[in-house]
Image: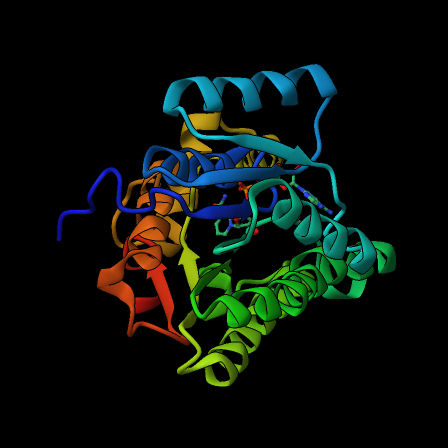
Length: 266
Ligand code: NAD
């Protein structure tokens, strides 16, 4: 199906964790499709401002940045309020911010467990908690939660991430059921491996532990889980997000859509 370049003209979107990686790919795809964008995420102020301005100039849509820590419910509420105040409403929320930590369960640092659950799971709840009423009142909305293949299946040494992402898929279904017939759809996207800073760190650790090159670590990473031996790109996750925000997807809700090179198929 062809996704029209301007199909989101006049829409307003928040994309959490969009100063890097997949979130940046999603923010770009939404802006290219005509949506105003509230960026969110960490980074040094000059770099973040350059991203914001670059997006605004390239796609001629208004772009702002809000620095909310998604693990802080008051900050998330303030970000939603800021989007409404700045752009006059909120149509699209992409809950994308997320962290990873790799360690066996018996050695998993308690502080990492708390933080990953707070950002990857509670952050998604807070976003939906404060955005849904705005969307339901307007009678239209799209919530896209970036879960993971790890929202559907597990791997060792990722207990907090896998628990949080399974939780995101569950919370997505609850929100979809509650919002049904309000004009708001709620879906999860479940990417396989995407080559972002989050994965680059894991590749470095793997290469060092195994005494191999980064290229060999990449090959092994893909071979372990994906029948299709290619990384998904942030742009591809962005295009799937735009599709879910368009009129074609009006009856897709409560779904957890893999974009994972066949990872969860086997
Ligand atoms: P990344 O590290 O490149 O980007 C993470 C972004 O989240 C950054 O902009 C960062 O500033 C922001 N962020 C981190 N903590 C935050 C917080 N508390 N509040 C607000 N923003 C915060 O990571 P990525 O690979 O692009 O991952 C994005 C999402 O995609 C995550 O939810 C991740 O779990 C998911 N995902 C990634 C992959 C992959 O292979 N890279 C696969 C499946 C799912």
